Image (cartoon, rainbow over all chains, first blue to last red; front, side, top):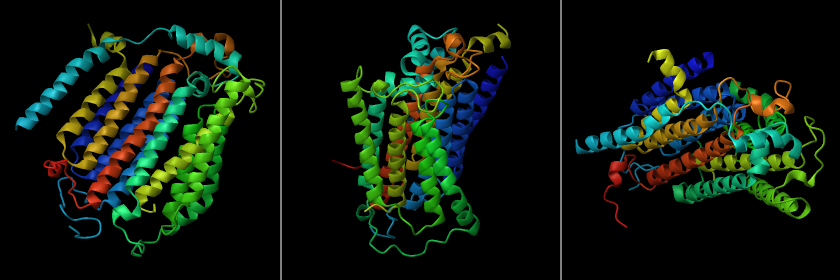
Length: 96
Length: 233
Length: 126
């Protein structure tokens, strides 16, 4: 019963973080919140008695995925604001 | 406006299809017949203490082979997309990368060896404790990433990464074929002696196969990071 | 039916996972930025993994690893279902591969001179 209550509370935290990740204007905040969703999901996996899956989700979801997003954003010269659409502003600087 | 209505209808339709299923199914009382058979037969058949490892490597080993193939295809795709030529970067990258801070450099010097050892520990003990090839491979890729962050001008050696990846993939299939010829089927771990359950040298060839999977996954994830960083030729 | 009875009847993991799937689908459909679509796909994949694993959640049981807590003779009576765990292990790694591919598409489109909103690719012709 206690485990069920803990899983439900973690579920609410995950859903709140997920909605925050979709609604946030700043892309960095979205990336960190999606890493937070993965971290709480790995806690839920541990509470349900699946330690293998919890380790994999913690390492991949909130470790490597965040780094992959950050590298990709840096390589694409993407500004932090979601709605900024620098059309034609390519990586080499103004090449059309 | 029309787009918002359509999006709302799509999400509402999916909710109407999904939520009764998710809220209506309760929690099962006992595992099914197949799961019970796996739980009862795995220690006797293969001598593995971690039943999930026995399922991933031997009972459902073909699915893992397919998954390693999918990961290879994704890594090849990312590497082919993001070569330096296609990104439009010339040979001389402008040297404006800021140097890493002193804390990062010092900590990386201390931690890299420990991280690699931890990753090897995880996939060598995959049949005894929670863990295994995928987790150990990710930890090794994280150790290589830490090295990349501490020295921004260094590059991962593309030749060594592809050699490790190809050789461990070939050895994985080779162990599977050895199982087909020397034991009872493809990827059967009984080619090596089963040993005593709970000791490090046990469970046949399961630790060997999982170590090969761990090396391959680590090399592939490092290749993805390398390509996204923009250093791939 | 009181709150307590309702809570004890549903599967909490399946419920959280299903709502996360809906949040992820809404994020993919409603936001035009390429990177935001990749982030929403990642949330969607976490939700799907939760839903798959929820079929193996049995109350009051321990992990399917044989040690002093559950040895071989009482294995099947004290362990959770190991088959969905093996499936989700594969699914998590493939989720990372799909995210990396999506991001490499976005980087390549930007490097070729395009914008970062999916609206600006509306009139691409074959």
